[in-house]
Length: 206
Image 1 (cartoon, rainbow, N blue to C red):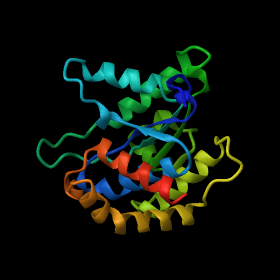
Image 2 (image 1 turned 90 degrees about the horizontal axis):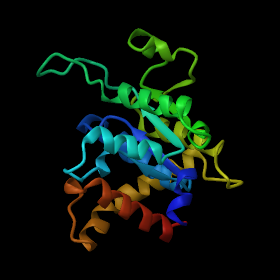
Image 3 (image 1 turned 90 degrees about the vertical axis):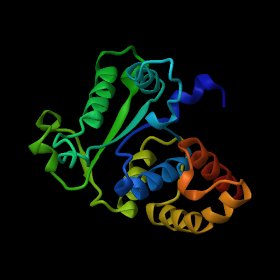
Image 4 (image 1 turned 30 degrees about the vertical axis):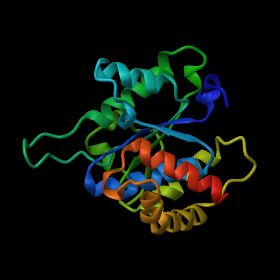
């Protein structure tokens, strides 16, 4: 696929990157790949010569789809302040959709949270959006992502949420072996490492 055609299948993943969310994040990335799309996120940003917000602008511009998880709104234990990166990036995505050219107006997004209606307490301006809860469950997050992407996929059929979760569980069991073959350690995988391993595994287990 030519780079110019990536817009139709690129998915901006705006979610927490902390250890507590790691399993859900890995599951979401896997499910996006398994549905025939390509996940993109801030973790791929590695050019220290470019301002971070400009990197985000570039990635958001290049993605038709966005998955935004607003799970992390509690105060940080160290500084007693909340993390605003995810609401900010959701705002950037919605603004690109609202004020962009005809290509950007085709953007679509899925907003996730751990509980239904919780968002009304901290970001009520998005009331009216279809917020989907996942209950901090990787299995539930996979189903939410799969069902949403299925509505936008050009493929007639894609695996169901249960099937993708079963495939993800199999992949996780095989991940230590796959890492060993590539001389990588599962606890030190970069976002690029993980994406490469998932892509190769899916090609062999279509």
